[in-house]
Amino acid sequence: MIAALVLAVLGALAIRVVVEGRGELAAGEELLASGKRAEAIRAFEASARWYLPLAPHVDDAYARLRELATSEDPRVALAAWRAIRSAARATRSLWTPHADDLAAADAAIAKLAAADPEGAATEGDAKAREAWHQARLSREGRAGTGAVVLAALGIALWVAGAVQLARRGLTATGGVVRRPAGVGAAMIVVGLVCWFAGLYNA
Image (tube, rainbow, N blue to C red; front, side, top):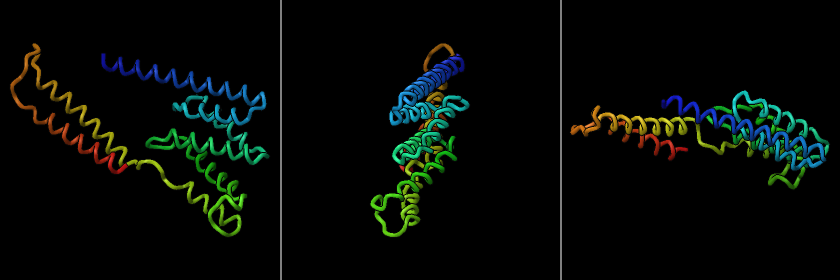
């Protein structure tokens, strides 16, 4: 019953992700057809953010953004690349689904930003300014994988410990068992320690 409930919840979430993602993609297509490129970029980014593995709307949204990134208007190109970067970073977890798009966006944004001599707090030619932007774009602003795994392990241990205590604390008839459940308590303590450690190092 628990497994069926979990599958039903996951299925409902997956359906919502696909519906919302396709809706944003369709909205972006309509905006693009009417010449509203800035609004279309925002819609395509929103579609890409509704990420689900193997969902076709995600790849379609990235494809539309890459097409807009080839615009001769540097403002449109920069906005499209920034949307790609934002969507790729927002959908990362233990892995980066669109790592190639993220790397391409960082390189393109650095190149476009370097074209403005006043856009970087550094002196030198275009290559020096591009390197300055690239260094700042490549900075990691999210929790490390180890910290995320440690925090997730802590939550899993805490829940497992709580279940262990509940099972050992009740008899088959629903009566209370008057005996300590050290294993469950230890799992809860270790889980909390791991969770706090993961958050501290995030």
